Image 1 (cartoon, helix red, strand yellow):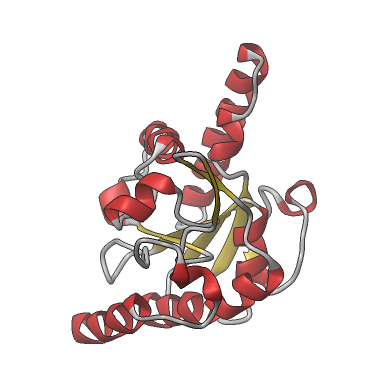
Image 2: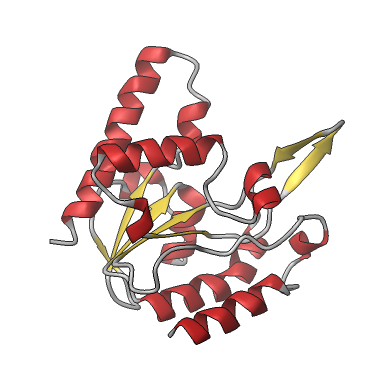
Length: 196
């Protein structure tokens, strides 16, 4: 199994399926144990992830880690990846501003998502945000309509949809941010409960 992972990871590092590779520093592939029962899918790498080559290490990743701890989920025991493996951004001066991947980029990256799922065969796949939910379900869905519901996936296992932790960074009101964070932790606990 690890040899197959190495092959897929190597192929992903050289991916040219869409144009995002032209400006990104590197492919940011998923990370976690090859026998993880739970898989988390985000949107795409951010600036920090693009530089380090690791998923969920920037500001949203710090919120994600804190929420995982509160939900009693060991990050070292889960697989963490993104729907799109290259950082899409707009350059503004010295800053690289995140730009949402489009339908073609999400579709081009579906190959890698499918490879990860086939190798991992997780019992539960958690989509963090609308882009991840689209990748997981193969169609556009809203968070409001799918959040916190167990969804049987065609390729096996259960799907679960919640917000992306970066959403919490954009809430200016402290009280609302706290309430949304609490709901996010509750969603993660719900996903953990699906493992039985």
